[in-house]
Image (cartoon, rainbow, N blue to C red; front, side, top):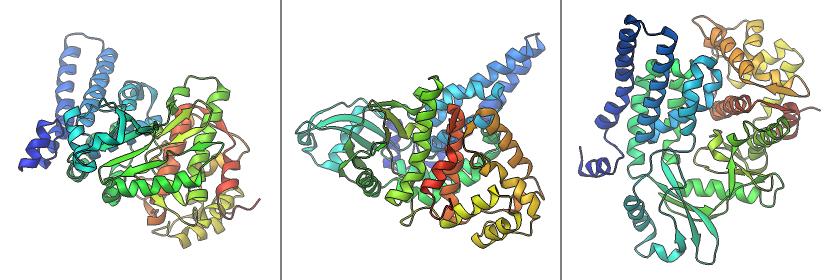
Length: 441
């Protein structure tokens, strides 16, 4: 282990491959130990259902502790799991929901001494002169950085995003290890393709750890939505590779509306899905990390959008083929839709057109009606349908995702997963008609 690795280990963020792999491997080892204990309890007459419930709760607690401590790619993976918990049967999802949801916007914090060291290295020895005040206790913590609240000289409240030391090395290490753990974590993810998640992260890792690039994307989005009645993107004040300073947004978490009346959930859910499509149309950027921690419901009813570390640059908006293919599916034109998918590079092998149509139907079902109800049960049914089509020889194994659609696909699935979590009824088709290039009214 290098001297720098040892220094980061002492600060609580393991960066060496050996240290991080050891902690991640504690997940399957812990599971084996829990099963042994559970067997012993059942052997001595404990209620089997209660034993299983206790084991799931213990597994959830360990998963949160390990992924939260490691941060980096492990945290990214945990956030993905928390978003897709709608896929899981309720008896399995319940103990994980509470713990995994924490990973969407929280993690064990970096010590204040380490935060000050990063600020000094990035902003210079007189870094405090920029601020009237700064709270060295983190207001939020996520996968590769944490956010502090401060006030610039002149009185502007700001969010100061500080990257964890060693985050880039940690990400690279995690991405190698997560794929090896795919078989272990797949049952927790309800069958979500963790290998695909890993590859997406690997493809964008160099961008996510560069806050200057994130600042460019955020500034581009902020300019596009300046004065917008629906959305707010914080203005960027300064950025270095590891520090990003932008306007502070006061608001409540997107998930805070989960127990609100129908009209509140539906309004906020519609805002959320509109933001996903409005970004490419108006800013030329797709916000590609749709987990709820990146969205805030502001006091004036608008939706605040933060964290532009992972984006797809779409200067011409979403691909025009999307509108045409969805509308062909709506009118049941199987032959034309199959030909269009083949032209776009979605079909890797010969495929039966009717089977293909059935496989894709869940993706377009919300667009078939004027208003659609997204709920957990519908989400699970669709997932089971897609998974059954992805068995050996199934139509799902003959499909592929062209590179231009990789992040679009992720956002589409992630977005409807969040809508299902919130139990939203919305006019989804109207959103497509407004923002998809080439939609025929």
